Length: 73
Image (cartoon, rainbow, N blue to C red):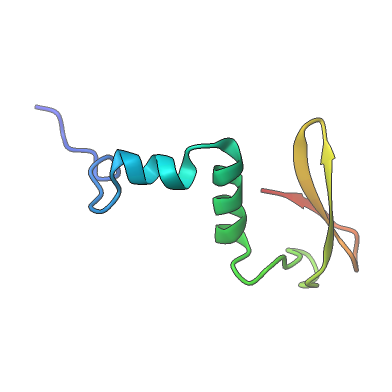
């Protein structure tokens, strides 16, 4: 007998709702950004709240405006 996957059967997350919220790569990225920095960017090294965004090889990065630490999702 197979066990039920708790993630697969979450209440309140229908396929149409999932596609509405996470249906594109841009929507998924926005959701990850909001989950990682709900109050806006905070540098994981120094705690500064401002960063410069840039892309390298199609990957999005943030560089801290104070200590210049680079981070990604």
